[in-house]
Image (cartoon, rainbow, N blue to C red):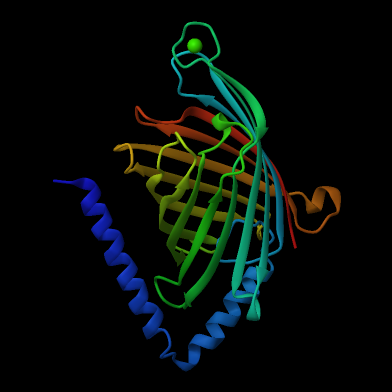
Amino acid sequence: MNIKATIFKAVLAGLLIIGWMSTSALAQDNTKGAADEAYKAEMKKDKTGTNPLNFTFDVRLINEYQWLNTDGDGYQDVITLDYRVPFGKNNKWQLRIKARGASLEADFNDDGIDDVNESGFGDTDIRFMTIPYLNPKNFIGAAAVGAEFFLNTATEDALGSGAFSVGPFVFLGILNPFGPGSIFAPGYQHIFSIDEEEGRSRVHRGVIDLYAIKTFGANQFWGYLDPQIVLDYENDIEFMLVEVQVGMMMDKLIGTNGHSIYILPSFGVGAYRPYDVSLEVAYKVVW
Ligand SMILES: [Ca+2]
């Protein structure tokens, strides 16, 4: 059995179902408006920046340190500036920009000599997203779609993909599956390059994302689990990344409005994992 073909068909079927839901959502019942308003009011109080359906102004400064899956020693430190802004009529759209600086040091063949030792700017991602379907009363409360553009901005070959890629994506929002303040958001993103630098590989991969979040204490604390299955169609390999995040609002400690911090360990699974473990810390401001 070809697992990738099966997954691809399942994703296509999912997209068709979402399309059908979006259309049928046009035939709204009278109570839907009230439920939508209640949900939106609830989201307005949430400054954790953890609900992917909640379009806020949002800036994050993130530092991630990765212990790479190389035969010899390999480390990468990535600093990311992540900025999100709602736009369009009724703020129906969200724009997210991620710009990176990276420092990479790796001995691929374990001869004690670094094969790469570079630092500079990394690639930049720009993502557009909207929520064509929202019905908080239903089991599947929302469906989001969008596209991410991966720009080839790295100043050193080792720090980027060497390609311009596009990644359309879709995810569902199952609201409050583990009690109030929780969301399960399974999604799929299909990423492919449309232009590569000479000598660089094509990019063609899929990412199955299984994001599950719960907030506690009236949106003061949160924890999430985000397993991601990466299907590299170009190289015919798979691996998995499992992210775990715990975070807390800082407002009551330092008298701010919408400031928070989090820590995010991530674990690579499978022979082709890019890193064994990574540790991310971030400061975030939501308004
Ligand atoms: Ca080496």
